[in-house]
Image 1: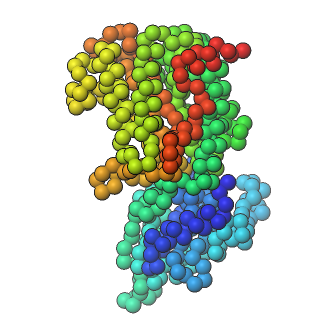
Image 2 (image 1 turned 60 degrees about the horizontal axis):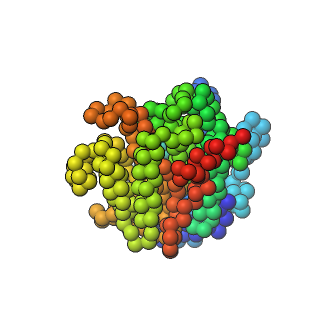
Image 3 (image 1 turned 135 degrees about the horizontal axis):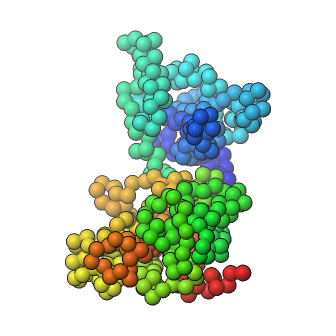
Length: 437
């Protein structure tokens, strides 16, 4: 877990960036109803979690740089024995100060009376407008209350500033404790993929393999970091396939894209392998191509390299391979310049990873690709997909969809692949599947 001292350090960093005349307001994620009165499993807002780690809904964090009586104020639910008998124990304002290191805490029911007074005298409000329209209206009402009560002499905020502008760059650089949690999430996800690989065989359904993943995640105390993709045969050509109900057939590949989440930190792994344990010649050719592209992209995950360098390296390998295999006509330079390779490789090679699977942080700074620095974590996931209706393509390639994805930490030296525990070389995959009981 993340220590209270680290949350406090993050808040101090954010307040330094916001400045002494600002107030930062961050609400917790609301509970969301799945149907009728049954809620979805609760998951805290990532920014709120990053700043205090408080796990409950109906809470608001206010940061007031330079405030003499405490800079970090939490509003949260009061203790309520009757509700706790139904929903479980609550932290309550009294325990919140000691347990989460904030300077003061108040019942959420009192926020209308207390927060406007804290807003008064602040010139800027940092907040995520547009995420929660109900809370947007509340915040505007609090600011208007200051203006109404104090009249023309009111020192009410003059501007609202997007909180993401300063907060999300902080989240881009992972601390030692964050990396420890991400390695744990990667380890659990890797075991899920190995378990799935051991279970796959012709005649099973995709959802049966999804069950193997979920068993591994929940057995280890983790949850899925996103809805797993388990696509066999032509379903592997659907980038965000969700049905997971297809029948696995002898001779098909299966593509599994699944990650585990530990203490809100995500992992994200994709592996593609044959249902019967043996690659066909065509499957192996395309698989080796994607793997070579991934190797080239991972090698670019080094300090001082541009964010785009990994994608460019993967594109060069895949474009050359598609030309060599006859899926794209003409030379590799023309395939890249015209974008002809995108017919079979339509997505980017990766994304930031952290509290969100597609984590925050700009990919470009002042119009130029961001340069990689130690502590950044990314996925590297090239792919080649040949849908079954691909025109002017030899039918032997039809229905082959391949993606290989790993989680990579940028270090001061060579990239650290924290998901390497799942085999991905052709010979390793075939040997692993042959050794199944």
